[in-house]
Image (cartoon, rainbow, N blue to C red):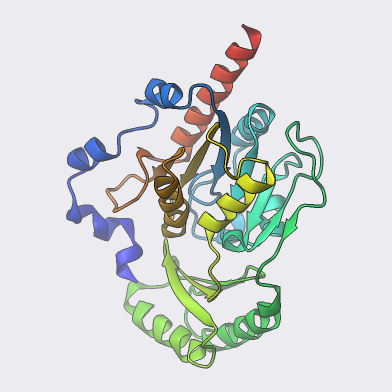
Length: 295
């Protein structure tokens, strides 16, 4: 569990050498525009740690009004999707923009724009490949709430198609006990798997579906399944975003941008330090697109 904390990774690599391999997307903005020239940019954005700051209480991970305005403008310029580990309804309640695609539960719950999208106003677009696991997820959630009840700071979140065990507010000396509590519940559910994020343990179905699969599904839904004229841009900060970064590398199409102040092993091509830099990058994309439209 310690390995998913950025401070423990800091000593593994020197930031200067890491930035050589994963330069700032702001510094390399013109280069990114150059490689996307003539192609349709499609935006994929994680939520926590990307559009909103990481906070101790996951229920208070609010995005700023300025970020919301920026994302709204972005969606008016490019097809835009939010891809999060949160359940889709929670992400929507944080973002509150109807013109976006939303992929919750690590991509296992996808829905098209309600209204306002100039690219594809497909209210019927729904993808839920793990529906059969819903009763099992609810059962595990209840058991974890009971099991971890005496662990101060533990927060169990039901994200519909997955369960998140947040330990950001748990004393480090209790991390091992919490992990054992989670494993003791998990042993009775071989059809579920345990993964780690930023101070969170994730329980998910074992189906072959993740944020990378969600990215491919959304590109196909937008009509870009086999297109060479599309340029997906995926921005995220979590281990689970690596599935999407990896897909982009395998497709040799578009690029991934990791949000992190600390060096990490990643399949992303570029980096940004924090949500404020993400907002600056998105705003520059909007200004570039608007200037092109004006010209």
